[in-house]
Amino acid sequence: MKLNFSGVNTFGALPDNRVYLAEITKSTWTTVKSGKNAGTPAWQFDCKIINETEEPEADGRQLFNTQSLDKNSLWKVMEIVNALGAGVSPEDTDFDLEPDQYLGQQIGVIIDNQAYQGEDRAYPKKYVSPQYAGYALDDPALTGAEEVPA
Image 1 (cartoon, rainbow, N blue to C red):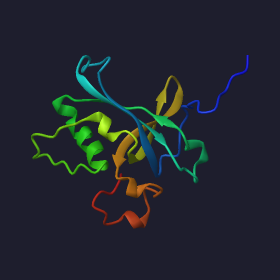
Image 2: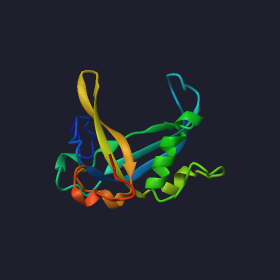
Image 3: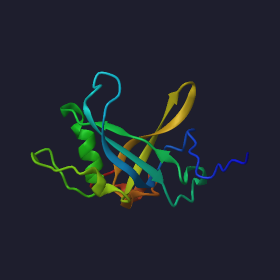
Image 4: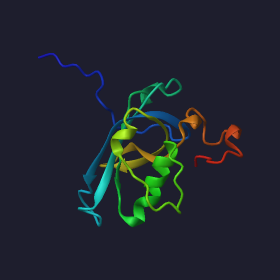
């Protein structure tokens, strides 16, 4: 049997000193599966690193995120939608989140490598505007930016 491994996701660590450009590949409602927030409504938000030339092993890498929608986690939802251009503030009381409206949109992603079953894996640490894609986190061009990704 011949197998086609093109497009198979790898899970190892990635350089975590820069902002990657990613495209949203999945955006849907779900529920938290385990932990203290199990059963809580959540936003499943997956993206794929695109157009990566400096770190070719990162190009095409899928990143997965299930974001709880409980009150204590809404800061992260606000970070994500603002990175997508929503302009939400803590004073907003009636934001209508429709996950499918974000499919295909681009977003900047900062990676955090974390140990999982004895192996480092890349996880999304922070989401920022796609305008920061390609910048190193210590790049002087980011100094003075409204939304310095760190």
